[in-house]
Amino acid sequence: MAAHSQTAAHVTKPATPLNVWLPPVILGWVIPGGGHFLLKRTGRGALIFASVFLMFLFGLFMRGMMFTPQGGGDVLTSLINYGGFIADIAAGAFYLIAAMFGYSQPDLPGDVHDYGTKFLVTAGLLNILAIVDAYEIAAGKKD
Image (tube, rainbow, N blue to C red; front, side, top):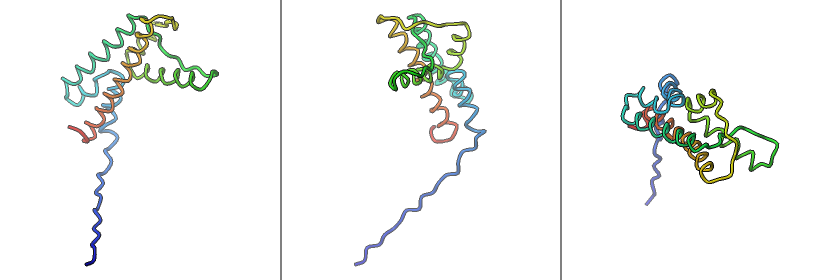
């Protein structure tokens, strides 16, 4: 008996055009949840907006530190500062408005300040997840 080898033909879908997914992604970065509003997912968009806004606001109220990209130190310190900066700026307009109004808190010792920093970073990371979700919905990879 001869074994038949069957190869499954992989059908690749054409790439989603840039003009379909780019507006929700950019709007989702600038205004958290904005990409979902643009895609008519208002409930999810409102939930994302409220979550990111409240996390960022609580981080500011706890006087959390916003990261700035700094080099010159050891590799781990540079990685933490750059990673924190990317996460902070991912909060979109909230970060830009806070920076525009001059919010600058030094890194102070204490639990409350440390939790505030974590809230600011987590707000940006949550917005990154929301941006990826908006991309997947716009590209037709998710309902």
